[in-house]
Length: 248
Image 1 (tube, one colour):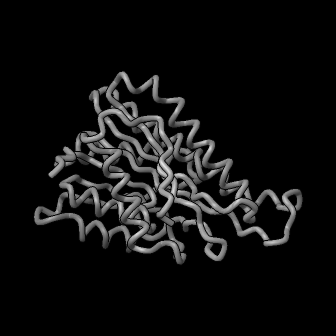
Image 2 (cartoon, rainbow, N blue to C red):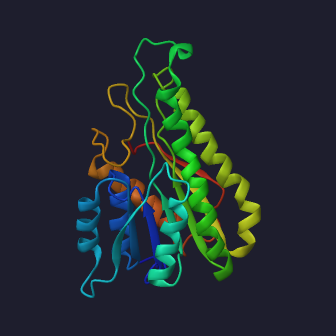
């Protein structure tokens, strides 16, 4: 069996009570990693998941608040993990907030800013902040893995698809831009994007929402990809945006 080298590693998952985030947290815990579960609103769900993943010693998981719209929140979340476990090895940034659904027949120029701003801004501004705080310690220790969960692809012409594209491009630019700077310090960074969402299904839900595509199968497939990219078994893949065509 392939040794992923995650036993005892420390992992921070943002958006940990969402479908993808919770699946990722469980997948890392199954590999023997210690997992910090960052949540926005669903404290009870996060704490219940922490109890589930804590293990016999009750010390392998804990829940920590994380606010997308608070610029100081990423700093305190990363600091909490480093204080609790002495360092942070892996960051999985799965938290994001979706803008209001665009009316099916609305023209692009008629979409109000309050509909698209949360999608565009909250897709990558919090990720940038969290990566900034997480990568500093990883570089000092000479090892780290970062995976960003990008907004899903939607069919061409689907309402709101252009805004998802902008958000994906922002995250893709972040991972490509950091490769040269952090790679020499043993840090690999990638993005994972769920595949195209059928027209009758909304995009992947953020923390606190439930949608048809938030099925166990799709989320678990994405989680497996995240675990591999963030493991010691991945020694070369970095700067990539991996689209999982069958995962919605």
